[in-house]
Image 1 (spheres, rainbow, N blue to C red):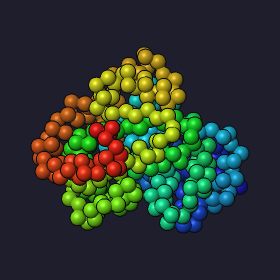
Image 2: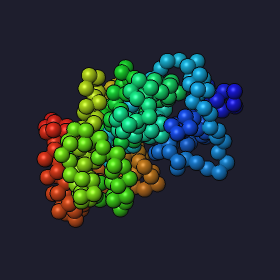
Image 3: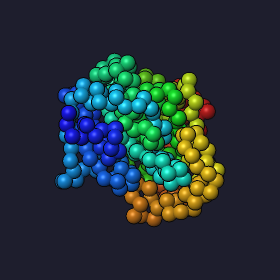
Length: 327
Protein backbone atom coordinates (compact mmCIF):
# COMPACT_ATOMS: atom_id res chain seq x y z
CA UNK A 1 0.00 0.00 0.00
CA UNK A 2 1.29 3.48 -0.90
CA UNK A 3 2.31 5.86 1.87
CA UNK A 4 -0.50 8.39 1.41
CA UNK A 5 -3.13 5.69 1.02
CA UNK A 6 -1.89 4.00 4.17
CA UNK A 7 -2.28 7.27 6.11
CA UNK A 8 -5.71 8.06 4.63
CA UNK A 9 -8.34 8.36 7.33
CA UNK A 10 -5.78 8.48 10.12
CA UNK A 11 -3.99 11.69 9.13
CA UNK A 12 -6.43 14.54 8.36
CA UNK A 13 -3.79 16.19 6.17
CA UNK A 14 -4.00 13.34 3.62
CA UNK A 15 -6.87 14.50 1.47
CA UNK A 16 -8.69 12.83 -1.48
CA UNK A 17 -8.59 15.77 -3.86
CA UNK A 18 -10.08 14.44 -7.08
CA UNK A 19 -12.03 11.52 -8.49
CA UNK A 20 -11.18 10.84 -12.13
CA UNK A 21 -13.98 8.85 -13.74
CA UNK A 22 -12.08 8.34 -16.99
CA UNK A 23 -9.38 6.15 -15.47
CA UNK A 24 -11.32 5.45 -12.25
CA UNK A 25 -8.72 6.73 -9.83
CA UNK A 26 -8.45 9.10 -6.87
CA UNK A 27 -5.82 11.80 -6.41
CA UNK A 28 -4.48 11.91 -2.86
CA UNK A 29 -2.57 15.02 -1.74
CA UNK A 30 -0.83 16.02 1.47
CA UNK A 31 -2.08 19.36 2.75
CA UNK A 32 -0.78 21.48 5.59
CA UNK A 33 -2.90 22.72 8.49
CA UNK A 34 -3.57 26.17 7.05
CA UNK A 35 -4.56 24.81 3.64
CA UNK A 36 -7.09 22.46 5.16
CA UNK A 37 -8.67 25.01 7.48
CA UNK A 38 -8.31 28.31 5.66
CA UNK A 39 -8.67 27.72 1.92
CA UNK A 40 -11.99 28.87 0.46
CA UNK A 41 -11.77 26.28 -2.32
CA UNK A 42 -10.15 22.86 -2.08
CA UNK A 43 -9.77 22.68 -5.85
CA UNK A 44 -6.84 23.15 -8.24
CA UNK A 45 -5.92 26.40 -6.49
CA UNK A 46 -4.41 24.52 -3.56
CA UNK A 47 -1.61 22.98 -5.62
CA UNK A 48 1.98 24.03 -4.91
CA UNK A 49 5.24 22.79 -6.49
CA UNK A 50 6.38 20.86 -3.42
CA UNK A 51 3.06 19.18 -2.69
CA UNK A 52 3.22 15.42 -2.14
CA UNK A 53 0.58 13.58 -4.20
CA UNK A 54 -0.25 10.26 -5.84
CA UNK A 55 -3.02 8.71 -7.91
CA UNK A 56 -4.48 5.46 -6.62
CA UNK A 57 -6.96 3.12 -8.37
CA UNK A 58 -10.53 3.36 -7.13
CA UNK A 59 -10.51 -0.25 -5.94
CA UNK A 60 -7.57 0.44 -3.63
CA UNK A 61 -9.12 3.66 -2.33
CA UNK A 62 -12.45 1.94 -1.69
CA UNK A 63 -10.81 -0.99 0.06
CA UNK A 64 -8.96 1.41 2.33
CA UNK A 65 -11.96 3.54 3.31
CA UNK A 66 -14.16 0.52 4.10
CA UNK A 67 -11.88 -0.08 7.10
CA UNK A 68 -12.82 3.35 8.50
CA UNK A 69 -15.84 4.16 10.70
CA UNK A 70 -19.10 4.51 8.76
CA UNK A 71 -19.69 8.18 9.60
CA UNK A 72 -20.93 11.19 7.67
CA UNK A 73 -20.12 14.88 7.67
CA UNK A 74 -22.71 17.64 7.87
CA UNK A 75 -23.34 19.77 4.77
CA UNK A 76 -23.91 23.33 3.67
CA UNK A 77 -25.57 23.34 0.24
CA UNK A 78 -26.34 26.68 -1.39
CA UNK A 79 -26.95 28.65 -4.52
CA UNK A 80 -23.98 30.67 -5.73
CA UNK A 81 -22.78 34.01 -4.34
CA UNK A 82 -25.02 34.02 -1.28
CA UNK A 83 -22.60 33.96 1.65
CA UNK A 84 -21.94 30.24 1.97
CA UNK A 85 -18.19 30.67 2.56
CA UNK A 86 -18.96 33.24 5.25
CA UNK A 87 -21.42 30.87 6.89
CA UNK A 88 -18.89 28.03 6.75
CA UNK A 89 -16.20 30.16 8.42
CA UNK A 90 -18.59 31.43 11.09
CA UNK A 91 -19.84 27.93 11.93
CA UNK A 92 -16.25 26.71 12.27
CA UNK A 93 -15.33 29.67 14.46
CA UNK A 94 -18.36 29.25 16.72
CA UNK A 95 -18.01 25.48 17.13
CA UNK A 96 -14.35 24.70 16.56
CA UNK A 97 -15.40 22.06 14.03
CA UNK A 98 -13.34 21.38 10.92
CA UNK A 99 -14.65 22.83 7.66
CA UNK A 100 -14.06 21.42 4.18
CA UNK A 101 -14.95 23.84 1.40
CA UNK A 102 -15.98 22.80 -2.10
CA UNK A 103 -14.39 19.36 -2.41
CA UNK A 104 -13.97 18.41 -6.06
CA UNK A 105 -15.38 14.85 -5.74
CA UNK A 106 -18.80 16.31 -4.87
CA UNK A 107 -18.60 18.43 -8.01
CA UNK A 108 -17.75 15.31 -10.02
CA UNK A 109 -20.82 13.57 -8.61
CA UNK A 110 -23.03 16.59 -9.37
CA UNK A 111 -21.85 16.84 -12.97
CA UNK A 112 -22.31 13.11 -13.53
CA UNK A 113 -25.76 13.22 -11.94
CA UNK A 114 -26.81 16.14 -14.16
CA UNK A 115 -26.07 13.98 -17.21
CA UNK A 116 -28.95 11.71 -16.23
CA UNK A 117 -28.95 8.39 -18.05
CA UNK A 118 -25.78 9.49 -19.85
CA UNK A 119 -23.90 9.63 -16.55
CA UNK A 120 -21.06 7.18 -16.03
CA UNK A 121 -22.00 6.06 -12.52
CA UNK A 122 -25.74 5.60 -12.14
CA UNK A 123 -27.73 6.18 -8.96
CA UNK A 124 -26.57 3.14 -6.99
CA UNK A 125 -22.86 3.56 -7.71
CA UNK A 126 -23.11 7.32 -7.18
CA UNK A 127 -24.51 6.85 -3.67
CA UNK A 128 -22.00 4.12 -2.91
CA UNK A 129 -19.06 6.31 -3.87
CA UNK A 130 -20.45 9.27 -1.95
CA UNK A 131 -20.49 7.08 1.17
CA UNK A 132 -16.80 6.31 0.64
CA UNK A 133 -15.80 9.97 0.59
CA UNK A 134 -18.07 10.75 3.52
CA UNK A 135 -16.05 8.37 5.69
CA UNK A 136 -13.01 10.56 4.98
CA UNK A 137 -14.77 13.92 5.38
CA UNK A 138 -16.53 13.03 8.66
CA UNK A 139 -16.98 14.68 11.11
CA UNK A 140 -16.24 17.95 9.29
CA UNK A 141 -18.84 20.30 7.84
CA UNK A 142 -18.64 20.20 4.06
CA UNK A 143 -19.56 23.29 2.06
CA UNK A 144 -20.47 22.10 -1.41
CA UNK A 145 -20.02 24.02 -4.67
CA UNK A 146 -23.22 25.74 -5.81
CA UNK A 147 -23.65 23.40 -8.78
CA UNK A 148 -24.03 20.52 -6.31
CA UNK A 149 -27.59 21.34 -5.23
CA UNK A 150 -28.84 18.45 -7.38
CA UNK A 151 -27.19 15.86 -5.12
CA UNK A 152 -28.64 16.78 -1.73
CA UNK A 153 -30.45 13.45 -1.86
CA UNK A 154 -27.26 11.58 -2.80
CA UNK A 155 -25.46 12.29 0.46
CA UNK A 156 -26.22 10.17 3.51
CA UNK A 157 -29.89 10.50 4.44
CA UNK A 158 -28.91 10.98 8.09
CA UNK A 159 -26.38 13.74 7.36
CA UNK A 160 -27.45 17.17 8.70
CA UNK A 161 -28.02 19.69 5.89
CA UNK A 162 -28.39 23.47 5.74
CA UNK A 163 -29.50 25.00 2.43
CA UNK A 164 -28.54 28.66 1.97
CA UNK A 165 -30.16 30.85 -0.67
CA UNK A 166 -31.13 34.44 -1.39
CA UNK A 167 -34.12 36.11 -3.11
CA UNK A 168 -34.08 36.02 -6.90
CA UNK A 169 -33.75 39.74 -7.57
CA UNK A 170 -30.96 40.08 -5.01
CA UNK A 171 -29.22 37.09 -6.57
CA UNK A 172 -29.25 38.63 -10.04
CA UNK A 173 -27.84 41.92 -8.74
CA UNK A 174 -25.08 40.13 -6.81
CA UNK A 175 -24.00 37.98 -9.75
CA UNK A 176 -24.08 40.81 -12.30
CA UNK A 177 -22.03 43.03 -9.97
CA UNK A 178 -18.99 40.79 -10.37
CA UNK A 179 -16.21 41.63 -12.81
CA UNK A 180 -16.07 38.01 -13.97
CA UNK A 181 -19.84 37.51 -14.14
CA UNK A 182 -19.96 36.29 -17.73
CA UNK A 183 -17.11 33.83 -17.22
CA UNK A 184 -18.80 32.48 -14.10
CA UNK A 185 -22.19 32.13 -15.79
CA UNK A 186 -20.82 30.47 -18.90
CA UNK A 187 -18.46 28.18 -17.00
CA UNK A 188 -21.27 25.98 -15.70
CA UNK A 189 -23.96 27.24 -18.07
CA UNK A 190 -24.45 23.94 -19.90
CA UNK A 191 -24.58 21.98 -16.66
CA UNK A 192 -27.19 24.30 -15.15
CA UNK A 193 -29.17 24.31 -18.39
CA UNK A 194 -29.38 20.50 -18.42
CA UNK A 195 -30.53 20.46 -14.81
CA UNK A 196 -33.17 23.13 -15.38
CA UNK A 197 -34.39 21.62 -18.66
CA UNK A 198 -35.40 18.51 -16.69
CA UNK A 199 -38.11 20.65 -15.06
CA UNK A 200 -38.68 23.13 -17.92
CA UNK A 201 -38.49 21.37 -21.31
CA UNK A 202 -39.59 24.55 -23.14
CA UNK A 203 -36.62 26.54 -21.82
CA UNK A 204 -35.19 28.86 -24.53
CA UNK A 205 -31.92 27.71 -26.13
CA UNK A 206 -28.87 28.47 -24.00
CA UNK A 207 -27.23 30.46 -26.81
CA UNK A 208 -30.21 32.83 -26.93
CA UNK A 209 -30.01 33.91 -23.28
CA UNK A 210 -28.67 37.33 -22.33
CA UNK A 211 -26.36 37.72 -19.36
CA UNK A 212 -29.29 38.64 -17.13
CA UNK A 213 -31.20 35.58 -18.30
CA UNK A 214 -28.12 33.42 -17.71
CA UNK A 215 -28.03 34.71 -14.14
CA UNK A 216 -31.75 33.93 -13.82
CA UNK A 217 -31.18 30.41 -15.12
CA UNK A 218 -28.53 29.95 -12.43
CA UNK A 219 -31.01 30.86 -9.68
CA UNK A 220 -33.75 28.68 -11.17
CA UNK A 221 -31.48 25.67 -11.72
CA UNK A 222 -29.88 25.71 -8.29
CA UNK A 223 -33.09 26.38 -6.38
CA UNK A 224 -35.21 23.91 -8.37
CA UNK A 225 -32.76 21.02 -8.27
CA UNK A 226 -32.03 21.75 -4.63
CA UNK A 227 -35.73 21.83 -3.81
CA UNK A 228 -36.34 18.53 -5.56
CA UNK A 229 -33.35 16.91 -3.86
CA UNK A 230 -34.44 18.12 -0.41
CA UNK A 231 -37.80 16.36 -0.57
CA UNK A 232 -38.15 13.69 2.09
CA UNK A 233 -35.37 14.91 4.38
CA UNK A 234 -35.08 17.50 7.13
CA UNK A 235 -33.21 20.56 5.92
CA UNK A 236 -32.77 24.00 7.41
CA UNK A 237 -33.55 26.49 4.60
CA UNK A 238 -31.90 29.82 5.32
CA UNK A 239 -32.37 33.10 3.45
CA UNK A 240 -29.02 34.92 3.57
CA UNK A 241 -30.71 38.31 3.86
CA UNK A 242 -32.57 37.03 6.92
CA UNK A 243 -29.28 35.71 8.31
CA UNK A 244 -27.71 39.16 8.05
CA UNK A 245 -30.63 40.68 9.97
CA UNK A 246 -29.97 38.44 13.00
CA UNK A 247 -26.58 36.82 12.46
CA UNK A 248 -26.00 35.71 16.04
CA UNK A 249 -29.32 33.89 16.42
CA UNK A 250 -29.17 32.54 12.87
CA UNK A 251 -25.67 31.18 13.41
CA UNK A 252 -26.86 29.38 16.53
CA UNK A 253 -29.69 27.84 14.48
CA UNK A 254 -27.23 26.78 11.77
CA UNK A 255 -24.84 25.15 14.23
CA UNK A 256 -27.72 23.29 15.87
CA UNK A 257 -29.02 22.11 12.50
CA UNK A 258 -25.54 20.89 11.52
CA UNK A 259 -25.10 19.05 14.81
CA UNK A 260 -22.27 21.35 15.90
CA UNK A 261 -21.69 22.30 19.52
CA UNK A 262 -21.79 26.08 19.87
CA UNK A 263 -22.91 28.39 22.65
CA UNK A 264 -24.52 31.82 22.60
CA UNK A 265 -21.16 33.22 23.64
CA UNK A 266 -19.16 31.54 20.86
CA UNK A 267 -21.74 32.54 18.24
CA UNK A 268 -21.63 36.14 19.47
CA UNK A 269 -17.84 36.12 19.35
CA UNK A 270 -17.83 34.71 15.82
CA UNK A 271 -20.21 37.28 14.32
CA UNK A 272 -18.52 40.20 16.14
CA UNK A 273 -15.04 39.19 15.02
CA UNK A 274 -13.08 39.82 11.82
CA UNK A 275 -14.87 37.14 9.75
CA UNK A 276 -17.91 39.41 9.29
CA UNK A 277 -15.70 42.31 8.25
CA UNK A 278 -13.70 40.61 5.47
CA UNK A 279 -14.49 39.01 2.13
CA UNK A 280 -14.70 35.32 2.99
CA UNK A 281 -13.30 34.05 -0.32
CA UNK A 282 -10.38 36.47 -0.04
CA UNK A 283 -9.99 37.48 3.62
CA UNK A 284 -7.30 40.03 2.80
CA UNK A 285 -10.07 42.30 1.46
CA UNK A 286 -12.46 44.21 3.71
CA UNK A 287 -16.15 43.44 3.21
CA UNK A 288 -19.30 43.46 5.30
CA UNK A 289 -23.10 43.77 5.20
CA UNK A 290 -23.05 47.54 4.57
CA UNK A 291 -20.67 47.26 1.62
CA UNK A 292 -22.76 44.36 0.29
CA UNK A 293 -25.84 46.59 0.36
CA UNK A 294 -23.96 49.28 -1.56
CA UNK A 295 -22.73 46.77 -4.17
CA UNK A 296 -26.25 45.41 -4.66
CA UNK A 297 -27.78 48.89 -4.97
CA UNK A 298 -25.14 49.92 -7.52
CA UNK A 299 -25.67 46.73 -9.54
CA UNK A 300 -29.45 47.15 -9.49
CA UNK A 301 -28.98 50.57 -11.04
CA UNK A 302 -26.28 49.67 -13.57
CA UNK A 303 -27.81 46.35 -14.59
CA UNK A 304 -31.50 47.26 -14.36
CA UNK A 305 -32.29 46.15 -17.93
CA UNK A 306 -30.62 42.74 -17.58
CA UNK A 307 -32.11 42.18 -14.13
CA UNK A 308 -35.53 42.89 -15.62
CA UNK A 309 -34.92 40.33 -18.38
CA UNK A 310 -33.79 37.80 -15.82
CA UNK A 311 -36.79 38.33 -13.54
CA UNK A 312 -39.13 37.83 -16.48
CA UNK A 313 -37.48 34.46 -17.14
CA UNK A 314 -37.76 33.54 -13.45
CA UNK A 315 -41.42 34.58 -13.31
CA UNK A 316 -42.09 32.50 -16.41
CA UNK A 317 -40.59 29.29 -15.05
CA UNK A 318 -40.74 29.69 -11.27
CA UNK A 319 -43.96 27.76 -10.68
CA UNK A 320 -42.98 24.80 -12.87
CA UNK A 321 -39.39 24.47 -11.64
CA UNK A 322 -39.14 25.39 -7.97
CA UNK A 323 -42.58 26.46 -6.79
CA UNK A 324 -43.92 29.79 -5.62
CA UNK A 325 -42.65 29.36 -2.05
CA UNK A 326 -39.13 30.32 -3.23
CA UNK A 327 -39.01 34.14 -3.40
